[in-house]
Image (cartoon, rainbow over all chains, first blue to last red; front, side, top):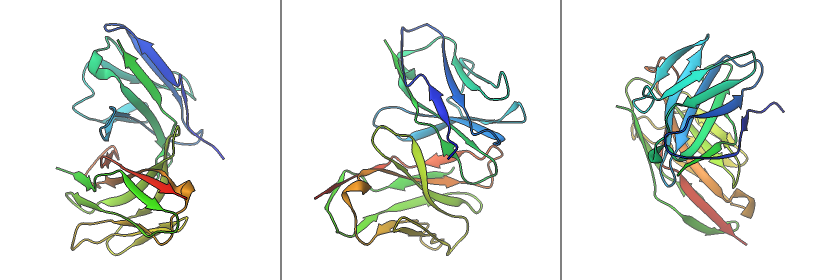
Length: 112
Length: 114
């Protein structure tokens, strides 16, 4: 069964460093998403991406964040200058239609 | 704005007990409603969905009915198993969102003991 994959599973970085989280969505899907979950809190929407552009973003997704689909398979989330409060589990998701978003296993980002 | 409220966990049940996890929502328009499940060490998996009022979503013995009059989407299962131990998330998709962003509740942890 096709699945969304994410790498790395755990990333440790120092405050102020840039990180890139990588996702491979399901191959025939057209809509891509990033969500995050700070420990003990709810899953929060960051950004959605369709047709090579951002279709919606939340207040969390400020200028420190960017997304890219550099080729036909990868979908990346870049954080330019990480802060302590960026420590969270980051989930990538994709879907081919409207309703059923398929999630990856997540990348745990730890900022020290 | 849109929001989802779930009952606080953790919920601990014995095997074969009846499960209810409450979920209520606030939304503009006519949202679609979902339950996602997260097993230990894994990502979020769609458990069931309902896209309009009075729809009942069901999967793997779990059910939830979209109740517009009470703005609720409670998850139920008649007889839980140890393998159902996981975190359950209620989520909402509003048709007012251009980007189809899901709005999640905080999650409810379920532990089923033998």
